[in-house]
Length: 106
Image (cartoon, rainbow, N blue to C red; front, side, top):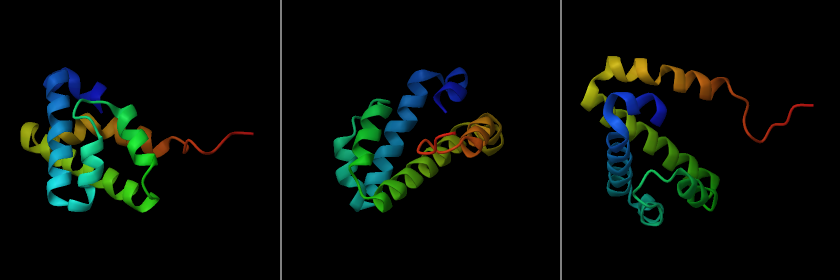
């Protein structure tokens, strides 16, 4: 998503959306506050991943869904729904068509 959005809103814009998304997730879903407090507010996806793998599967999936939804909603308020959908179409298509990381090919 960062690669798709950086040419439009810049790296600082992507980081700002990420930080705001994290903040909104924690403020609207108190059970996510612990995750929010452990994730740095920079665009550090390695740290985010390490925090999520420590959570239960249900909590990690819930946080991921809420974070992505919040990020997308913020983006649409910034650049509009049509441009947001066009920019992220390839991101969604690639993530849905790629095999899960746990699977291995014979």
